[in-house]
Image (cartoon, rainbow over all chains, first blue to last red; front, side):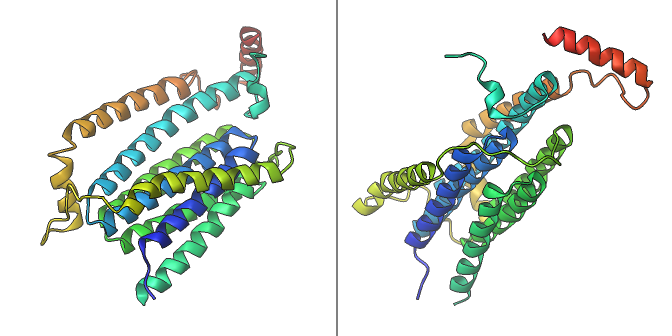
Length: 101
Length: 190
């Protein structure tokens, strides 16, 4: 028995769907951020696996850029979240529906 | 054999940890489970010969990102249980699975066609970090620099956004002063 690329892609899918479940059921904005991290990590696993099985380094480099983007997203997102919490005293998603579209 | 065992072990652990991170009703449990899941993800990178990526995963995610989250959680009321959106749980689940399957189909399409050509093949006789450096500083030099500028902008944004009113020290002020300040903020917010 051998681990093939399909194994890794299936794992990546499972992790991605776990992240999607999190995004759909969480109401707390901080928990939504956690779910986003899970999504990005799932994609990274898939990219690294493809990079390994096709002997191509591009997948790993894309994973690096994804990590950089995730880091800056958290820095800006948490800053905005802290400002929002100072203003409204709550980080529930429902408090954000102020535009009444 | 070692690869098979470690793959299944890490898969089980990662899925379990991320599931806890997504479903737990306590923010601290979710954060700890997320940290554990990130560490286990780096195990996959080591199995896949992407040593440098694994190290970066531990340093950036388990180090920087999780510390940022714990810093953010100090601001929020984390002792309170998280209230979940009250919707039918079946619809989100079905939608998640369907969209995940669709994503896999999109990504599988070129693989099924089997027409992937290796543009940057693994260089023989060089370590993983060395190979990554060779490709990163030739082909991907400009994206690398742009990412550096993006991180700088994000750092400034984080400082500006989170650092508001940090010049006032709440520990050195008297209670009445804090009360007055909060009163003024409440008026300004309205």
